[in-house]
Image 1 (cartoon, rainbow, N blue to C red):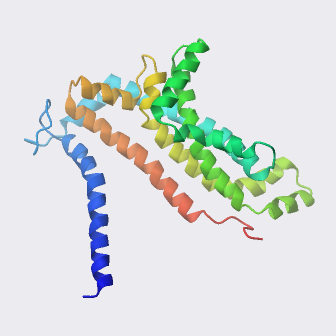
Image 2 (image 1 turned 90 degrees about the vertical axis):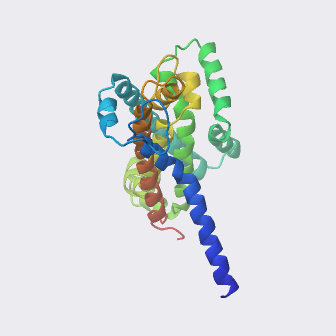
Image 3 (image 1 turned 90 degrees about the horizontal axis):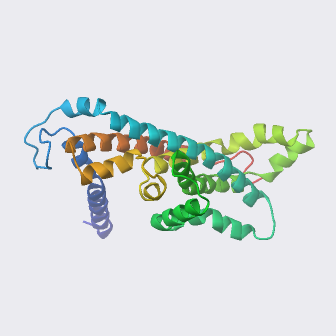
Length: 269
């Protein structure tokens, strides 16, 4: 057996081991959602049942937390799409003093530890005498959602040929028409991918939410409280399955969008 074949087998084994290490805990979450044991995580489960799905469906606190998470994630994503795209356009298509500093400030929130962002936001809200509400959660989530959209949009803007925009303006199109017919079709997939990732990040965010939510509980905060003071442990696992699916689908969609949408019209011309 050749050495390169042996290396290939070891590489495959390492990849499989890494995937198992990452995903076996998720499989355990799914398994415990069906257990008949209500008070502990006994392995193997003494039995399997679907009753916990009905119990979860009838829990009003679950629906309240889910509704708040969807609302916060949706609004935060819209804010991020607008601000992130505008920042990306300004940074990638303009030359001005402090451009690199502004770019650094835009991406800084996602580079900082979440607890630092949470403490700074809480201090700012207290200083401005802003009561904790859904608005404060949205503002907190928007700080890092903007970064996700910005990173996707700025990369696409830099690949967009300036000659297409100049040709559109030379042919009589105004700024709005150029944006609608030239710029937007070329950055649409990047915006959509960034929006999907922003929604997924906002939906399962815990640390920043802890500092900005007050008495409200998004779904991840509800799950954390249920783990500390459990009423029905399998209900938490059923909800965790929902969170995994809700966050996995946007990430998967963003992956395929960015993988197949890297080329822009007129690139390299």
